[in-house]
Image 1: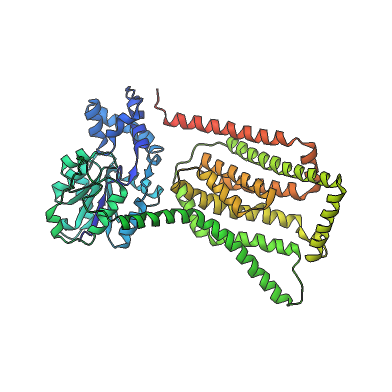
Image 2: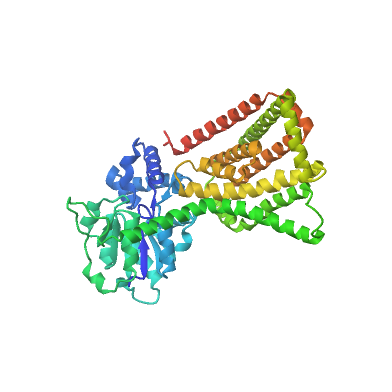
Length: 542
C-alpha cells in the first residue's frame, strides 16, 4: 500500500506560468535579450533555471547565475504570487491527509519560495515535508531533491521505496523517480506533454486533476505486488492517452465533482446564511429574555429597543465568525501588497464617501418627491394617513421611540454593524468567491449582500457602498482599508438619513449628481494609477 506521496509543485499542484515566465522575461531583458512572447518561455517551468538559461539562450555558467539573480529580483517579491492552484488540488490533499498518508513537496524551486507559495494558498498544513533547491545553486537536480525528501521521511533507516509514489508534470520528475525505483504518475495537464511523459517512462499518465484523483485514491489500498507490474497507460482508438490507466468510475467521479461544487458554494454562501439566520436568532433570544423579565402582560417592546436588538444580532454574528475571519486576515498579511501612499488612501476613502452621500441624498430626494406627490393629491394623502394611523395603533403609541439616540445609532449602525458586515461579506464571502469562482466575484458578493439586506432604498445604497469597499479591497489587497471606507460611508449614510438639517442641505441645496460624478472620477483616477503601477512591475525593464 502506498503510504508516502511526493508532489512536484509547478505544473502539478499549481499553474505558475505568469509568475515564472514574466520573471524570466524580466531577467532576459536585464541581460539585453528581448522576448515579448511569454508563451515561448514555458519550457522554463519545471527544470532548474540554470539549465534552462544555458540550454535555450546559450549562456555561460556566469551569465546563467547573473540571469538567475535578475529573475529573483522580480520573482521574490511579485512573481511567486502570480500563481494559481489547480481546482480540486486542495480537496485531494485534504483527503490524502485524512487517510493518514505522508505528503511531501519535491520541487526544483528554492525551498523559501515554495514555503511562501504554500502559505499564500493556505495549503502548507497538508504537507509533512517540503524540500526544494537552495538559493546558492546546490541541490537543484530533481534526483537530489527526491533523495533529500526520502532522507527526511526515513531518518532511521532504508527508505521503503515500494510505498512511495512521485507525481509530476515533466520528464525530470519521472526520470528521477525511475532512477530511485519509485512509482510515478505523470500529469499532462501541466507543462509536460503526454509524449514527453511517455518517453520518460511514466508508470501512469493522467490528463486532469480528477483523473489524478481517480488514479491515486484507489492506489492507497493497492498492495506491493502492483508496483512490480508498473502498468503503462493504454492508448485510445485515436492514439491519444486515456485520462487514467484505471477504468474510470463515472459515478464516483460525478459524486466527487458534486461534493466539491457544493463545498465551494457553501464556502461562499455559508457566512451570509449564518448572518441572515443568526441575526434573527439573536434578536428573538434577546426579545424573549426581556419579555420574561417584564412579564407576559407588559405589551410590545418600544421600537427603539427593538432596533437595538436587531443591530446587536448582526454584531454578535460577526463575533461568532471571527475564527474564520482571522484565518483569512492571516493569509492576507502574507501576501505582497500593491504600493499605495497616503494620498491614494485619502482619495479612495473620499471617493467612497462622496458616492455614499450622493446616493443616499438621491434617495432622500426621491422621498421628498413622493411626499410632494401625496401633498398634491388629497385622496392619496387620506389613504396614507389612514395607513399610518393603523400602523401607529398596532405598534406603539409614540413612534418617536423608533429612532434611538443619535450617538447610539452611530455606534451601532455606523460602526459596529458595518464592521461585522465587512468581516462577513468582504473578509469571508468575497475572499472565497475570488478563490472559487472566476465569474464576477465582486458582483456576486454585492448581490448576495443586497439579498440579505433587502430594505428598500437604503438597502440599495448599502449594497452599492459595500461594492465600492470590495473594489478598494481588490485594488489595494488591504482589508482594513476597505472595512474603514465601508464604516465611514455607513456613518455618512446614517447621518444623512437621520439628521433632518443635513438631509435638507444635501438633498435640496447640493446637486447629488456632482457628488456621484466626483466620487466615480476619483475612483477611476486611482484605478488608472494602480494599473499603471502594475504595468511597471510586470513589464520588463528596458
